[in-house]
Image (cartoon, rainbow, N blue to C red; front, side, top):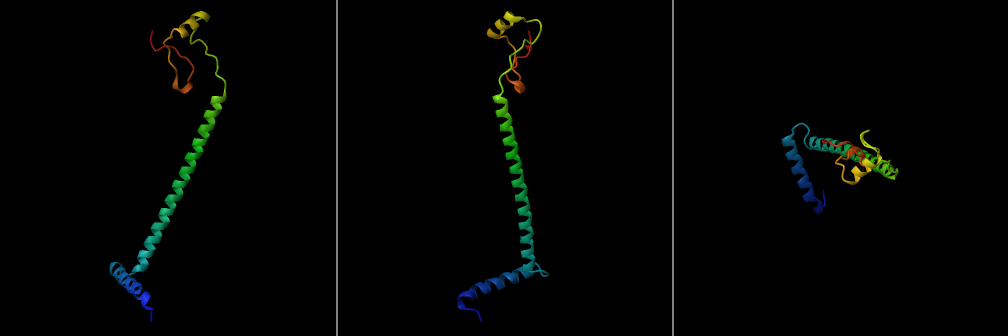
Length: 117
């Protein structure tokens, strides 16, 4: 009783359902639909977790940028001599001549004691 334009689709559907019943005699194509729905729910859950992780990373990045901007806006603190052995002019002369100290990555701009003498 189907129109001729829909008969090919009906035959394809019957063949699909018959093959699904061979693969799964109990549930047939309903079992395949159930599996696809389960897979869809799992993928949606994974997507939601990935989106939450992206949001968390974006928030961390924004916080890091704000912290860096805040630190960059603060004026530099004057450098104090690393030990009592240096005094005024000697210390300035040592700095101008390339004292040989090193800069700490965690606190750039603070001159520390030399590694060797």
